[in-house]
Amino acid sequence: VTITRTELKKIRSLRNKKGRLERGLFAAEGVRLLEESLRHQFLPVVIYYTPALLSERGMALVDKFRFKRIPATVISSRQMQLVADARTSQGILGVFPIPSVDLAQLYRRQFRRVLLCESLSDPGNLGTLARSALAFGFELVLLAGTSAEVYSPKVVRASAGAIFGLKVARIRLPELLEFARMEGFKLVAATGNGQTDGMELKSIVDLHKLIVAIGSEAKGLSSGIVENCDLLWRIDHTKAVESLNAAVAGSIIMKQVFDRW
Amino acid sequence: VTITRTELKKIRSLRNKKGRLERGLFAAEGVRLLEESLRHQFLPVVIYYTPALLSERGMALVDKFRFKRIPATVISSRQMQLVADARTSQGILGVFPIPSVDLAQLYRRQFRRVLLCESLSDPGNLGTLARSALAFGFELVLLAGTSAEVYSPKVVRASAGAIFGLKVARIRLPELLEFARMEGFKLVAATGNGQTDGMELKSIVDLHKLIVAIGSEAKGLSSGIVENCDLLWRIDHTKAVESLNAAVAGSIIMKQVFDRW
Image 1 (cartoon, rainbow over the protein chains, first blue to last red):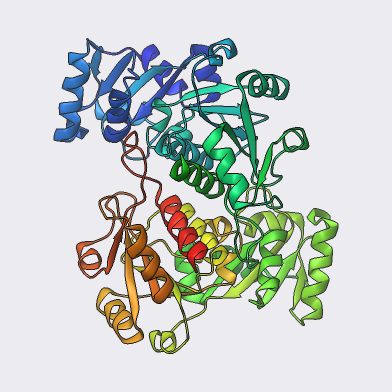
Image 2 (cartoon, chains in turn brown, blue):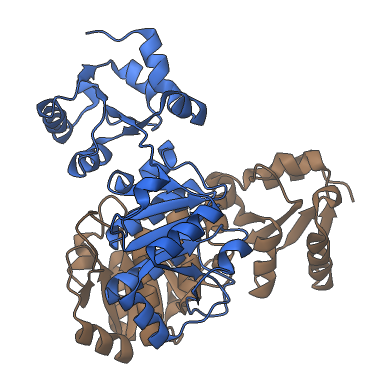
């Protein structure tokens, strides 16, 4: 099977938001990322690979996808360079369906730990938070406001494949509050001016289902969320800095929740 | 005073490693970053500003620099766009001397908390680690191996100005081991396959001066460091991910050290 120019253009278009939205697909590149997709059974609709660029580990991965009956198409180095987002391609790229998560599906799903990202604009931070979420037992990531798009190449890469293991959904504030109320979640905000009360914290974390909310780097969380929070969680630090990086702050809270689980 | 083309070229050259090394200078841009330089009394040799682009807060900052007798030169929007690294300039840029830290200066300085970054190639991670280091009471950042350059625009930006508040030095492995031995530091490695022993950890953190070592995203710490560590510190997480982001891992350990301080 040889690949047509039109097909190459279609893959290439997945580097842009417009292309992804039009086709309902996204791309992930590199051996490690695609290994994670396999591990989480989040399978591509097709993979493209370039034997000349691919490591032994990469070739073994192609075989595993083949075994799963995923169509695998050989393309040339030049073609791979054309469609790949990475500067130096590892010779493998998978095309995946963007999961469409209906909010109704979030109900009665036994989620206990949810991460809410509000208007996080930095793709690196969003990807890193997804990675930490999966690392610390969070099962669902909700995106509110103008958050970066979770299936962009930068976010996928920064997540180290964690987005393959998480449910992700966009949500608006009223829906979020309804979801939290109906499902009995406590809403916890990471904020610079909250309170950390060891005992209160511990009892909330031990007893309740939690939504941990992280706000934008520049502005923090919106008042709509802060006002509806059950707990404002401040991470204690020196006064030598004004705030922590958003991904670091979120990760530290998720780690603390995980340790007290 | 009008600015010459040669001077503009000189400032612009600070965006590149070559220019920074040749001149021993680096640039930092934006109101928040320059406010941090002031807060930490790490002063620029000169600032450039563009009134048309500058907020009120930015103008107030210019006045503060003037009060400190820092030369302040007005440049046009076009000139600012030319020299700035940021896509949309906030209308202020400071030029700073790159501090040259002699290793001899690190001795007998009462450092208690040191962060060691080995071959961290991602500027965002290095900057974020510097920010967390300052937040959690670390006083010195040591760079070993092929770490990213700490005064590059990306690192400075990701540090949110924390590099103005930290001592930073490059060090080679033999010098590091000598420094740790002579000054009585315990060397702690963040690693995926270490041990976390709550009690041992607590007593080490309580009783000793610490160097916390973070390795590269791709390869972790070199064997030269791991073999000389007093403690291998594993951050407990689910098996759904292989590892944490390097900046997140380092920040979580520094936070835990800070909390037990």
